Image (cartoon, rainbow, N blue to C red; front, side, top):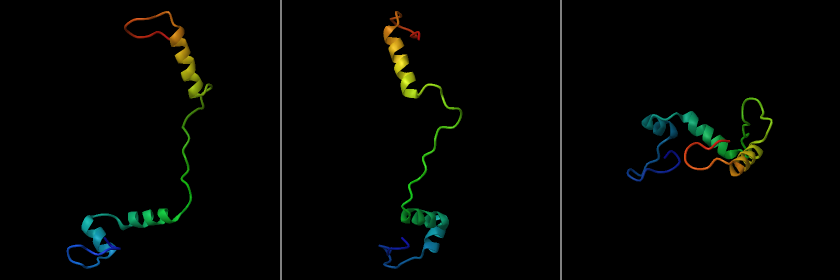
Length: 80
């Protein structure tokens, strides 16, 4: 709204007035505009805590292999 014109009145309203009316912090808009101008990619966060001895994909494959070779069948909880 602050960059455009109001469709109803045909007037331009400043960022301060629009933010006060909507009860929205101007700092959020300024921060978003600053982020849009930068080309830096955000840092991807790694999992917290100790690293597992076996990667997740290898563990999943081992569990699936064990379930396929398990002699237990039927209803109820499958034994691993």
